[in-house]
Amino acid sequence: MDKDVSGPLQDTHVLGLDFGTLSVRAAVVRVRDGEVIAEAVSEYATPVMDRVLSAGDGRELPPDFALQVPGDYLEAGRRACSRAVSASAVEPGSIIGLGLDVTSSTVVVTDAQGTPMCEKEEFVNEPHAYVKLWKHHGAQEQVERIVALAEQRGEAWLPRYGGTLSSEMLLPKALETLEKAPELYARIEEILDMLDWLTWRLTGSLSYSAAASGYKHMLQDGAYPSPEFLGALNPDFADVYTTRMSHPIKPLGDRAGGLLAEWATAFGVPAGIPVAVGHIDAHVHAASVNAVRPGQMTGVAGTSTCWLLPSATLMEVPGVFGVVDGGICEGTWGYEAGQSAVGDSFAWFIDTCVPASYHRRAEQEGISIFDLLDRLAAAQEVGEHGLVALDWWNGNRSPLVDARLSGLMIGMTLSTRPEDQYRALLESTAFGARVIIENYEAHGVPVDEVRMAGGLIKNDFLMQMYADVTRRRLLTASTLQAGAHGSAVFAAVAAGAYPDLPAAAQAMGGVSRRVYEPDEAAAQRYDRLYAHYRHLHELFGRQDRIMHDLRDLRAQALSR
Image (cartoon, rainbow, N blue to C red; front, side, top):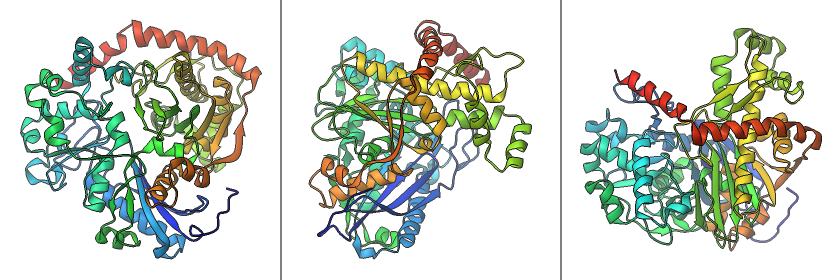
């Protein structure tokens, strides 16, 4: 970053934490120009529990569960922060604030003191007492009832979520807990997004993030869904907000509280420094790449992908994951859409579908299996593989908002090779991105530029493919740790180093010199494949319910 600011910010720093699906990343960032001084990563001790309750008695979990251990977040955060601060070699007293983000819609249930219910002896073997990760889709039946009732009653908040909801959100997960584990629910005193639980534990003060409250807890125009609506879903659910989610809501960049001494010692920073209100993992990337003004889209490409877009106007856009006043930056409407499986689908393919001979070849050449498949796939002409795929390996988040949809690949023959399938998977995610961009613009929300962040921006082949498929010039983040970096930007605002987010993002954020320009010749060839993708998208997403029936058959078989 070619920035230089003198004065009181010259030698100050902030600490940013990015809690992802598998690990937490911490970064020490210079306040005057946003330079990342040092960073560290620490994995959670317990892998995602999606088949068995490994932290409990090892019982089998129902389909579509994805659980975690809440204490792992704090311990991994302690390790990552202490390592990053130590590696930075900065004077600890120069660190003036801390900010954090967490994977969206990660829900934890606790008692009144913030102790997670899964840490209580009587609930250690109760799956619903654990953290429900964003990709926990066990509440599909509940979300269908919520949407049907909202449509029937004409609830004004439903269009703010594209006319439907996802089972990833907090409300269906809470209703699922009530109906599947009523004894546990009766003992729960707080239902929280993980980002709010973490700021509570770090500061001793409980408040809610305005962003998580709007996008994931269904707060719109200052109000949650009414007790009458909630009671119609289940009489015991009518008071869920008033009894279990009744604390103050604070705007982004505000101070959640001061860092407690025990955590200051663990992190190696001064006690009492401001801890910023927690934020959604994808959304902090917009601050990192300085895309907080209307029309600046941020694509956060990793295990899944989020597409974030500030706008000066409020429009009803079907299939968005939410639109919130000030959800990305104060003074704009923040739109969120996304794809539920991107990097995850590539990893699944590598783990389950690539023969051992390819792994041996990659090892012999001294490269990763991903690099080998990228090289083989990139050597092909567009359409050479004769395939087209749907990127729904973990459901469709936008614009169909249907967790019960599944992946698909058409065109395979006995001559189809792993690199053919791999390229088709990559292309499918680019096509899914194009659908989202076109959906925004078709409903009056312009996309003027696209800035990319996330781990997948290091894949040149994939980024060029996205530029060609979407016909968009792609700018890329200056750091692969844009999550932790973006959280650090909010920490600077909370610490008073900058008056607001636009000023902080302008000084600390930005993009690299790596830009991907669309190739029109390639774009025209991709158009033909995209037409087939759109046909399959409408056929299996809106017309034919075969994917739903296959899910039902699987669930019935597993229940026997």
